[in-house]
Length: 108
Image (cartoon, rainbow, N blue to C red; front, side, top):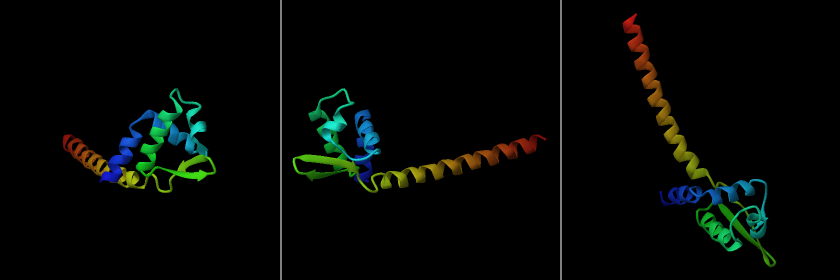
């Protein structure tokens, strides 16, 4: 469960979500990721460290630069967790619908 906790913690910050959204367009270096953000490049580097530790971003050294990209399967654990919740909610709503239908049929 620690892996999912790390991913949710990483996603809880709007700056990290903005970095992930930018990386959906393709890989980038830290400077490119920092440019549109209202924070310093060292702060972006700290956010990238959290994303890397959560398994959501990968880093590759190319000469002097560090290139960042979305990690394959970055959301796999989250998808499974949310899918289970979604199924439970749908089952609850189906039971509620059946109960309401039954109540309405009894009134008629």
